[in-house]
Image (cartoon, rainbow, N blue to C red; front, top):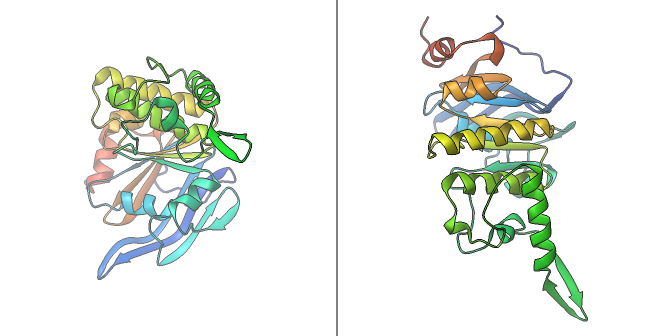
Length: 254
């Protein structure tokens, strides 16, 4: 079993090399090489403080790295901000979901990209078109909600997570980054979100999954990257490893 796959494959959709980031005197990332293949689920694991969140934030434009190169979809970056990454095709589903409770499902799905129709000099929201588009988006990923006109605050945690993921895909994302997407969910809602992640893969959407749940990582991912103390210490194919081995890699045990 190879635990270090240093050569970036030709089908990598998002990758970095030599990435470094410090906050004052604290070195958060040291010489990071990472890649995610097109159409795969790529997991990123490690203890708290290992550097996972900092790496993801550098990749999606929240932080600007001090050194190193980032490549996305064949072009060199880094992104100056998350909006730039989003326009290029990288969406991030945060733990706080970034949904607006008092808006409907359809309004959340079309947030910041509303459909408008012109009536003379006026631009009016085309709610009917957004409702129709929302139904199509949800149907594409087999997501069940009572109604696209339902306010998001009335939905369950799993349904809210599904709406966030659907919004990312509906915006045309090539890569969806998920940070602990099932951390606050029950067993059935976790299963529903995991099924949704599998459907993203069927749609050839690449997923980067940050998770502390190693069973989930092995169920869902194709590639697993292990971080410890700001460094990548291993990269393995999920089919070639075990939960016990991942624990040993994360902790540094032999």
